[in-house]
Image (cartoon, rainbow, N blue to C red; front, side, top):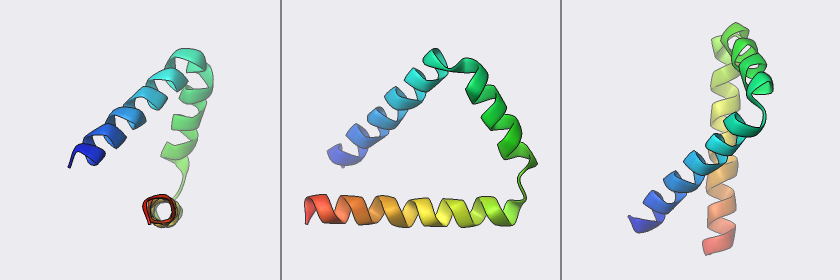
Length: 61
C-alpha cells in the first residue's frame, strides 16, 4: 500500500512540474483531449495502463 501512495505522490509531483513549467502547452493538450473521441481516449488509457503495469512488473519482478 505504501508503494501505491508513493506512486500517487510521484504522479502529482510530475503533473505539478508540467503545469508550472509549461502552462500554455498543458492548456492546449487539455483542449485537444476534450476534442478527442471517447473511443480513442479509452484505447489510449487501456494501452497506458497495460504499459504501466508491465513496467512495474519488470522492475519489481
